[in-house]
Image (cartoon, rainbow over all chains, first blue to last red; front, top):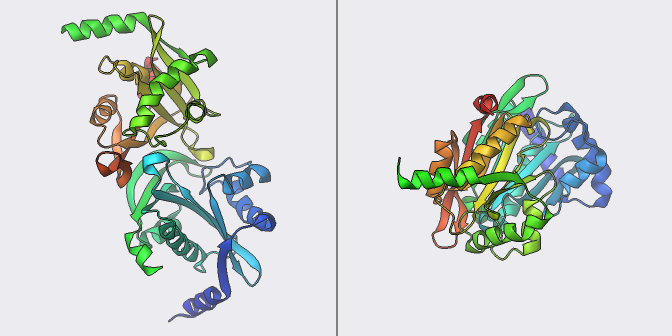
Length: 181
Length: 181
């Protein structure tokens, strides 16, 4: 076991993932803001206001969570249904890790937590609609967690530095997850 | 040329596609209601109310159109961006033809119109997020109009008669369209 893994394990023992509440909003905005301003991984307006960003993250129908370690919020995610009606059994999530806390397994923990929560809530599958292909760390992580690229949207994302790049649709069923939770 | 094609051509000469206005709402609801109640082609709650259905069809950011022939509304569609921010150059549409008016080229006319309108508005591509795989006539028509199936979501739609069926993601660029319009 590498030192990094030991650190990661210690990190996760001390951490909790819990529902977000109103008093988390400032911490969540501090995590979202640099990601939105950079505009490389989320299809959101780069000049989105705090109010609009929080309205998006806490939209009606979303369950919003935070990853908290030692009293500090280091990550956040939302969980929602991806479609209505006959498509309502497929979940969708978005995850963001705080700047400077990447590489510590926080996104992985949040994704694992979200799959458990989704299975518990009765969702049968999870879909990511718009994973930017240049966000290689995310693509690799989701693949490691059982997601498959089921579609590639050519040039569907205008990256601020790279121009038009592909976006990926990733999908996995949650059959196996429900049994482990 | 078959008689059907002559009819279709006469139909389209007499028809116009125009922006929907408030007084079209009753006609639009009469077109949407049976499709929503059937629940076989749209991921919407089958018991959706008139108010909620019209709110969806005329959602903020949608441009909504009607296909009118001889003073009768025989079809309707909406056009919107499919994603925000860096994904805002890809359009999305939904089309519905009035019960009893299928097979007359109305959906085809609306889709052609929507591609022209989207190109004119600066969209570079069009994406359908959730074409139900059992809606074979629609899949064939979109393919004929230049859309490709770029992804298949296994079991992502619960069909009221057939159980869990696949949904398709279809996509095409609009490069060629702008030049023809």
